Image (cartoon, rainbow, N blue to C red; front, top):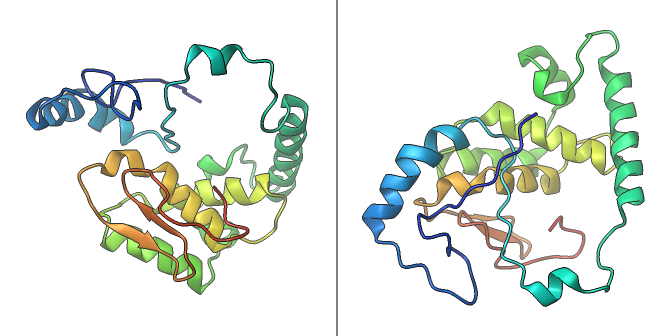
Length: 192
């Protein structure tokens, strides 16, 4: 596993609510082509992390899940994965081949629609990566079958490398996602 951090723009202020990006379109394109493009192509999960101000960072207020809860969820997901792959001798969802993809990543109509849209309208080519990340998200949720929420979230994790594409993914029930990584709608029960 590799974890990396990088600025999506040369100035480092992209997405900053307090400072404005001052990069030209040409600078951004050059930066992405030289540094980010080839690297991002090989990273399955990509997350934009906004700048956190000092007061928020040093606050004693507790938000979100505790590390213990997250650790338990990951342990449960690992157990599911070990049981699934014990005869195949695989250790990760990322290691699945085409046969395991077909067996372990079956999609319903909604999920298939999201994947089709991502591939045709948003120019995604990494279908197998989206499926494998969807499988992992499903395991983390403690569910057996991949749903539209997991496919949608997996597409979201691949979206920072689609900055130039202005496609929008809609689910027909109020949830939509632009390729820049910003939610523009929500529905109850949707993964956010």
